[in-house]
Image (cartoon, rainbow, N blue to C red; front, side):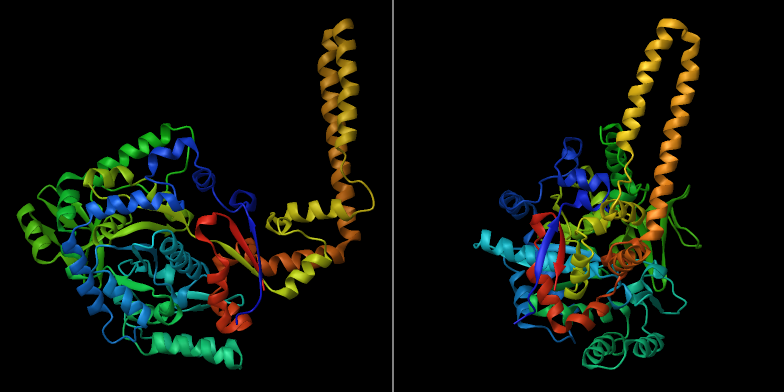
Length: 537
């Protein structure tokens, strides 16, 4: 029996934390219609299944099944995950995928939200389409080389940092140096049974596995194995063999570069005027070998790898692609295509930034004749304890209030709780009407007087604004205790004035909720609801 809870939902647009692009996508805004295939609603998945069924080769299933069995060797696999891996051989089985970096100890809380969104969507689809099987997949971004983005996690305002000289694909990094992180974490966790459980998770993942990819697989498997999550590592020679024709098209025909640039031109000319998330390169692959991951570029003589002396003629790089496909690592533009080639996938679940760059890619998929997946914004949520919710109620704060930027939050609440009216809008309106009369008099007598009237109007309106600000400031001093309590609570719920899910590590919530945490989130989050969840427990 998991802890009781309440869930309230807020439209993403009302939170103030999501871009106009994402808000417009969720609203199915007309300027964005041409940049995606099908909108994420339950009845969109029927035609998506039929299309993917036609476009996904049977041979790819066999490769996928063999690779997953190989990658899971040495790991204790749950019965539901084992069943899902076996089901992937069947033509009636499809995947729902999310991807994420190999952040140390999961990194921010939204790692959990991504995977739970994926698990829950599979459950919803299973009910709606019982003739098919749906498998949740976590794609490990093991080939990323941005070590500085993943080598820490936050705990109670402290950054627990993995100090290591690193280069190349992060999944291949050895786990040396994580014993020191473990000891530092142990020192700040405190001593209780939940702290011991958290340390056990860290130990079994990072101290008992030799590289970061295996450590991450262990951790995600422990957290979500009971829900049948399948974890895949794209850094694999057999999977890369399926990518070979597309690598050649990118290197020799610059297909992604041309198609994505064409989309971006259309994007810039559309009504939405949205920010471009990523720009394509002429070649969208890195050369990956040992601890090296550097961009492939075209040279006068053929091809080269930047920051190295590695050079290829056209004939040599063709041979390299055929003999060592594992050495060709997709970048942010080509990785989505790689994923959709090797998986019988229907939908990709990602954060706002990810959805933004996926929206640039549809024409590239069309050119490669690969089915473009449904794009779904992952669930976002705020966890509020019953104690914190009690404080909200005593302070007469609504859930929407606490999403305001802090200055607006304070000003709004001071105006509401003051026993005097601090809003001078009516006085300003009265003043404007008086000046309208003065303008009419000036028009009828001496038009040169209009400038003086305008100057006086601006001066007096400015004076009223100044008085309003001074009165508000005085009320803030008078109600200082109330302001402090409000801002302390908001700071607890929005660390560094950011969403909780972008700052907190799951371990902080585990100390509060223990083994109930993940079942609570599974019960609370509804991926197709397309609203921000506030979970009170």
